[in-house]
Length: 557
Image (cartoon, helix red, strand yellow):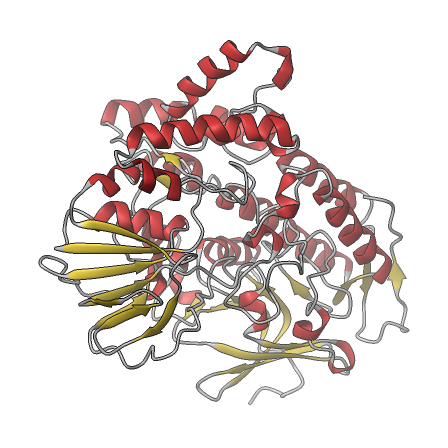
């Protein structure tokens, strides 16, 4: 029987989505005794849970897939430019099978608590089934949008029909034909599901509180010939992603907004509007992110495109945001979304004018009237970025809880370590380079950095790693300062920690969740930390910090 004070594993990875799968692959390659724990019945993370109609990438598929294996790149054929959920889940299962990763994974293993035992320098994890597992290092590969939030309406349990959050869309087929359906919410998820089901239901009523800017996804199939060409260009594609701020193929227009004429700007915007994916957002002038006048001009251009697509001018105006400019919040991409409102079976209810009062047995009641439905779909978003961390009782040195430490907003070093929580790593944590970029490109960077740190520690006999207080304070101040130049700082967005359905996350209490410096600057910074012997991280050979600690300094980020 193993000594309770000896770790059962060297590393435990929490989370079996895109980040966790790659993290366990890197650990297996290093020969580390590791296990991945996943709360769901199977792997996939966001692509396991989000099975709602219309769920798909808004990253180009071939830039979303893993880059670590030439063989994998040559084998997999992405069938759509922006791949849908079923294919994405098949891809992740293919990766796990190809590299024999399932033997390192445990499912239905929800971690309820993770407590650091300082006297033995190990983590004790409590699983929902009653087990305790121990490890030297915990790697949190938690999804940034993995904790769905429901609205706080009265009577939600009284509805006699079917109701669910889009995150929990049933795995079995949901019969939509002939049904009266309500969708609450017009964020990224709502826009996808509304566009997909409008022509499949008898009647669709959309309850919108705040409209979001959106632009065409312009999806399409990828032929055998095009996929063959993509395979020859993968090195070029990933090199482009590595040098762009967002980790996409889309590079910003380097000309100044006012260096070109109004006519030239309109010509560029017309071209970008018809291009696939985030081109309209990320191939644009950089000033739309920082200059209010430039952003207002571009936002009015997008408003004009919406007016051209929606026949009823009153409805069109309700679909145009007034509280933020285009690109200030995460931009949802759409497929015929605005045309949906030209259908006679689709109705838009502005709940900023007539709020929902309660859920009834037969549907929804607003201040104006009662509505009857067969199905209610809650597309009401997520407790983003820190929600997954908050749901686990994480305790570090002297029993300090991470939830309390981050109560007013996260503080980290590089978005990957936290002072007071030794041997806790986050390859895609808050304030890292993953939260605001093409996610797999960001997580590969984070996973590789965490794996290299563990390798360095093993080679040099270190058993404990903890960010210094000074390093954490400097990094958090750096992340905070970078918001000051961005228009997003004013937005009601998960980029700023806003969620009216989460207590304490209401508007006005900004949280500095994302690193706004872009991929190249982030990679340069974490590479510099490595090259300086993991500057800013206290590395020790024994558990107590007083026994032979070798501390690294920390310079300005």
